[in-house]
Image 1: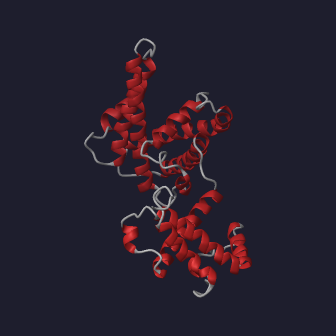
Image 2 (image 1 turned 30 degrees about the vertical axis):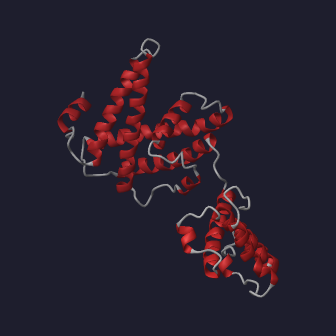
Length: 298
C-alpha cells in the first residue's frame, strides 16, 4: 500500500528528460509487455506471441541502453573493460547485442540450451543466473530512486551498477565466444602485425617508386597481388640478413617481455645494387602485366 501511495505521489513526469525518469517509464513498458506475454497462450495466437516477443526484446534493448547511459554518468571511471569486443566479428557488433544477451541470459537461467550447445550452456548457466539476479537488483534500485530523487545517485545504486557491469561484460565475452568464432589474443596480434606490414609495404613501395599514388587512389586491381607479394619478399629479405635479431625480438613480444615487434621501416635493407634488391621492382613489373585473374595480357 505504501509503495502504491509513493508511486502515485512521486511518479516522475513522462516528459522529464532525467535518465532515471526515462528508465522508470522504459521499465514500466517492459513489465507490461512481460505480463501480457506471460498471460498469453502462444499456441492459440502464435502471431500475437511473435509480435510480443519482438516488442519484449525491443523493450529490453531500451532499458539496457538507458542503464548504460546511467552508468556512464554514475560510474564513468569504474566501467568494466570491454577491449575484447574488438575481437568479435563485424556482424555481431550491433546496437541490439545487449538485448540479445539479456534474453539469452534469461533463457539459460531458466534451463534452456542455447543453439544446441549443451556443454557451453551448462558452463554459462551459473553466470547467467547471477547476471539476471544482479539486473533485477539494479532495476529495483533505479525504480526506487526514480520515486525519491531524480537528481541523486546513491552509493547503493553505484555498487549495484558496478557489480552488474562486471557480470554483464563477463557474460558477453562467454556468450559470444560460445556462439561464434572469436579470435584468440595470438590470432588478433598476428592480424595486427599483417596490417602494419602491408601499410609499411605500401609506404616503402611509394618511396622506391614501385607504386604510384594514382594506382592506390584508383584502386588498381593489380595491387591486390602486388602488395602481399612485396610484403613477403621484403620481409624475407630482411629476415635473411637479420634472422637472429628478428626472431629474438618477436619471441620477446610474444612472451610478453615488452618491446615492439620489428617493422619494415626499422630494418636495414640490402643495398640497391645488391641482386636481391631488384626482386621487388621485377615483381611489380611482372604483376602489372597480369590481368585480374593472374594471367598475362596478350
